[in-house]
Amino acid sequence: MTKIIAIANQKGGVGKTTTAINLSTAMAAIEKKILLIDADPQGNASTGLGLAIEERTPSLYDLITSQKLNLNAIKKTSIPNLDIISSTLDLAASEIELAEMNNREHIIKNI
Image (cartoon, rainbow, N blue to C red; front, side, top):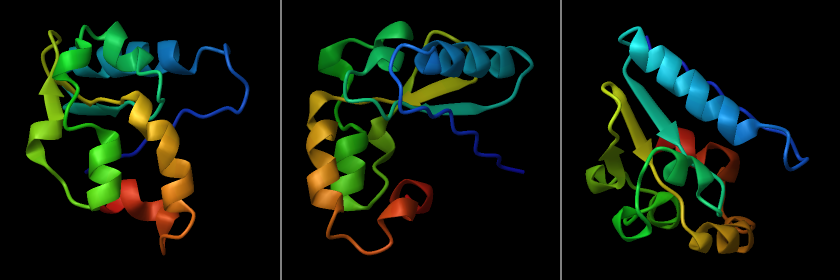
C-alpha cells in the first residue's frame, strides 16, 4: 500500500529537508521503497542525496508543467530503495503557472 508523507512548514530553517532525507533514508534501510520528491526550488534534498545539478533534468517543474510522469525524472541515489525526483530553480516559477490550473493542489499526486 502506498503512503504519502508530507513535511511542510512555512518557516525556513526548521529542519524540513533534514527530516525528509533522514526519514527517507531510515525507511529505505528497513527495505521500504521510497520516492522522495524535492519540492524546494533550492534543491537541497537533491544535493543532500548527492545528485549533481546537471543530473536534475527532467525535474519536478517539468513534471508539473507537463502534468505527465516522465520516468527519467526518477533518479537513483546511492542508498538502496531510495529514489528522488529532483528540483531546480525553475520550480519557483511554477507558483504563477499553477495559479490558473484546475485541480492544482492534486497535480503531483496525480502524476
